[in-house]
Image 1 (tube, rainbow, N blue to C red):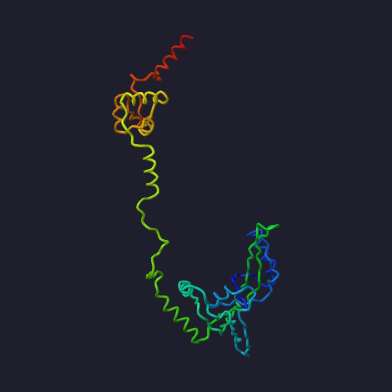
Image 2: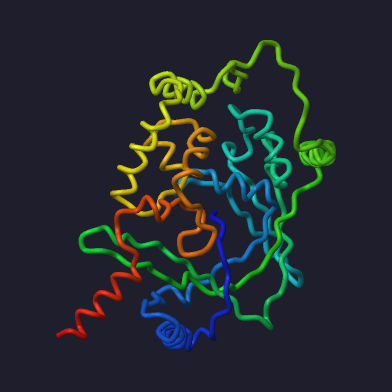
Length: 302
């Protein structure tokens, strides 16, 4: 006895071979195997706790036995008897896992063995079962996904448990566990050693203090010496910001600004906004305007 995973409408039995293949070619380039399209299958709705046990069972293992007793003038009497390993309780899981099973309409305790099918008529419907087997693109040669028509649904039924103490225990557990909160307060018997603990000093602060000690405290040099350093720097570049000048001269920012105000101009307009430049009387390079005038004069002379 095996459960079906999905259902989908299929054409009539006389034409579903051709029509299913044509429909699949329109939607994709994959072929559909319709060799089992004439096989009759049952579509059965089972309780969640049975479907959960069937999903965890080993492949090709027996999960139950079906008994059909046909009565003249009435619907057939169909019962299923589950295997012992399917009905056995689930062991070796935590309390939280057991609670999650109950929240998913399943259970970890033993389930009823006997169930009865409620058969319904599907004369006005055409249903089929389609399966998809994933391929392996890394194989040699690579294989693609395989889509197959497993059969045509000839009977539809609903699996209902027979009233018993075992079934009532499952329903009682579901009602009692439904009111429990997802999170619970748990008393700890010992200290948790894996959590984060407060520390006196962080690693980035330690590295910063170490770097500060290596560089040493910035001491004020003589004013003339600082000016010489500034003139040498402005020979390389015309504009500097205060951060770069503090780094190059290794002087306190407040003390350096006092000297800069004497020998430099502070630009407040673009394109050199917030940058320092030597005053005109200290510049030894010629302004751009004079260069342009000289170029124009030389072109006129030629």
